[in-house]
Image (cartoon, rainbow, N blue to C red):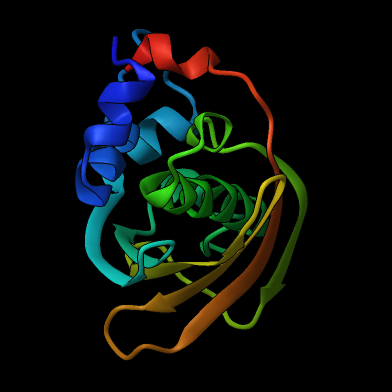
Length: 168
């Protein structure tokens, strides 16, 4: 188990990898498989002390596809939710934001399909973080040519709880 002070002492890259590697024994669900086995940190761009762009890489797995063989919109929304939150956690020092807060809104716009096997990159950008609200942006694109698959705008609210810390 890691403490809040342990997390605060970590670099953004160390935090991201810690969040992606939270092992949940016996958890065979969507998030466990995706974060622990498939999604990898690709790049971090520190724009300022409180602004960061985190890029994740993953391949479209059949598990997340719809009946037409493309990445399901609901899976994309879940991926945006989780990974934009991880980007937020990478740079914050407020205890409640270390728990990623809670989603207020998640607006996704889908532009083109991402077929099974396609390698994707997801840029997660922290636009603003305040005392009680944060705004994040996600852009999902094909790795081979940078074509945009979908985008999201994610609004979050601060909460003061830390239930996930015992899993780390």
